[in-house]
Amino acid sequence: MAKDIHVIKEVEIPADVEVKVEGSKVIVKGPKGSLERDFSHAKGIIMDVKDNKFIVEAYFANARKRALVGTIAAHVKNMITGVTKGFRYKLKIIYSHFPVTVNVKGDKVVITNFLGEKAPRVADVLPGVKVKVQGQDVIVEGIDIEKVAQTAANIERATKITDLDRRKFMDGIYIYAREVIE
Image 1 (tube, rainbow, N blue to C red):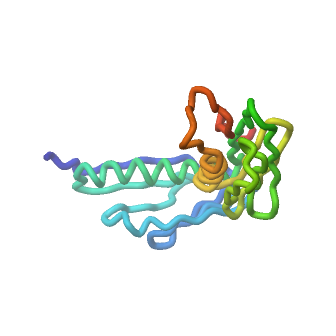
Image 2: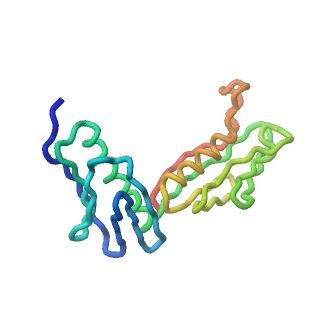
Image 3: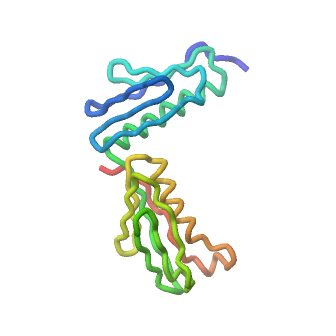
């Protein structure tokens, strides 16, 4: 395996965003809030902020280090997008047998009367994420893309059907759109 002598990626930092590197931690502050991420697993990767650019680089990089440079750059780019605009996932409530009721109670999404079940199904909402129910849509919003995506997945997974024919019982809550809030 050949090693690259110098691998570098740069991420532009907008004027209203502040990026700080403290050891292996990256802190991004913007108009919508602040995000922090620890990259202590990335040994041999150099992170720095110069001239409104976040720079990730590695010297004598094997395949793992090359991949880490791109991954860290992508994470920081998502953090910058999150603190400036935010992320939104849209889910659709679909039922053909029993009318499903979805309510948000604190940090839980409660799904009642799913397939006529007496016990409600519950999905966790991660901290920093807002969930709204508008008619047949469930809208999940926040600044951390991973928490927004995990919350949407929790809601989708709460209505997973395992013991019935999927072709006939298509009831559930499904993700149909992911977007950056403009």
